[in-house]
Length: 484
Image (cartoon, rainbow, N blue to C red; front, side, top):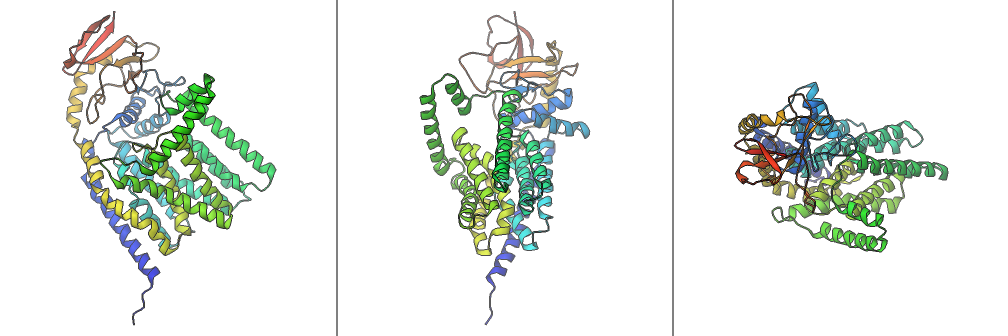
């Protein structure tokens, strides 16, 4: 009678899944026409235009921000200055291409994957499983063809997993800790919440004195992250800023009640909220992110190993920060927490037994197939906007480059609703003829106080008469007004 080795069956099945995932990625990649591929909504516009601005002007001042002034230091956007410097700097070394962010992020992810796969601790079967986990989990494919920076942070998480593993393999050596802290500082400049990951060193403390030192180090890193946001990122109206305003006013009771309500609402949203057009695929992704947190919490409880305690702790810290200070809906929770899953993937392949792998692989495979039409739609949306039309519109709006510069930049208020899936802002020049930045105030957060400035840009079709302003120049698309 033929005896079937169940573990071997699972191994070969995982290998087949890897081939399927790679085939799917290649098929989707070939759908993309990178010569006609553009960003389509607010955050994508910001990353794209601000990187282009640095490329053209060598200035870190954001060309696309909420106020047109940007942050108090450097004039950066809500995302800070590092993305602009990073992508704009690479473009300076190579050349600018409108789809370079999408291509570069895929290259970074591939490099990060190779870095993890070359770790000697992994067996061939574990390497195959690692590829399967990271490609079948759909967040990579859902964001790799967008101009969002989620995939870049997935790459950071993969590298971080190896650095953490090395720290805990040689707990008496300081060099792995230095490498880890240096990497956290580097990626924390992209997204300041990475500084909270410094807490991964706490279980390594061998004495109370060392623990106290590590705690001070973590608190210093976290304090730096808040200072970085304050000075190098443009303020944005959100729940965190609202909570801080209550505390500054001395409304402590109101702040505590608001915090509790917000936390409970976010918890409910995380566990139940479904994007109508994405159905249970959306919810399954969130529960798959929770799975390794719960798994390593259970391992930490049973075995009390410092590594398991660290892995469980960082998961709960990230989850708490999301629920307490951010939003658990509209894909925000997935963008923020998905790096956790990719970080955990390295440790999961080292820990999971073959039958345990199915707990994650089976639902991942199900939503992998369900995500296919979503990813195709993502690609089609960004390919439907004509690059040739963009070039024609830019020629018509060249007159904006002639506006005089004040204090090293030109500020223009956009006085119309910016539509997604359009060329509304992509057509606007980001530098003048002297290579100084043109900074646009984007009307994404409306307040009771309208934006004030010397120059206002309106759609030509709006036919508005701006009181106190003179018409300077008109094109088929936009009309520029100057304050009298």
